[in-house]
Length: 137
Image (tube, rainbow, N blue to C red; front, side, top):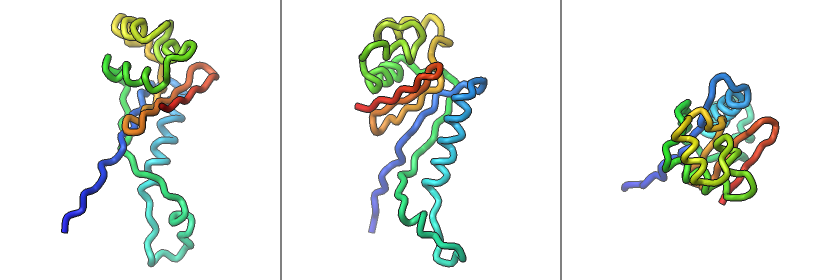
C-alpha cells in the first residue's frame, strides 16, 4: 500500500555571516530543525515524554547569502504587508514594493538581512536594528 508523504515546508534564511542577528537566527533555525526531527526510541533509558508531547513539524532549511529574486522579493513584501514602512524594513530606503524592487536591482546590498521566510505558510520575519518585525498573512 502506498502512502503519500507531505513534502517538507521550506524555510529560507536570507543570511549575512557578518551580522550577529543573522548568525543567531541561523543557529536557532538549525536547532529547531534538529529538534523537530528527533524522536525517542523505546529502548532509551531516559524518559522520552518531552519528545512525545511536543509536535514540531519538520522543515527544510535553506540558507542563502544571495539577495532574493524579484519574484521572491514580491512574495516577501506580500507576506510582511504594505503597512507603514514595511518595504523599507526589507529593502533599505524603499517606500513601497515598486521602489523596493528598483532599489534591490540597483544595489543588492540594500536588502536587509536576516530575513526568514516560510514559503509554505505565507510568513516572513526579520530584524532591522533593534526593532524586530514578524508578519503573517
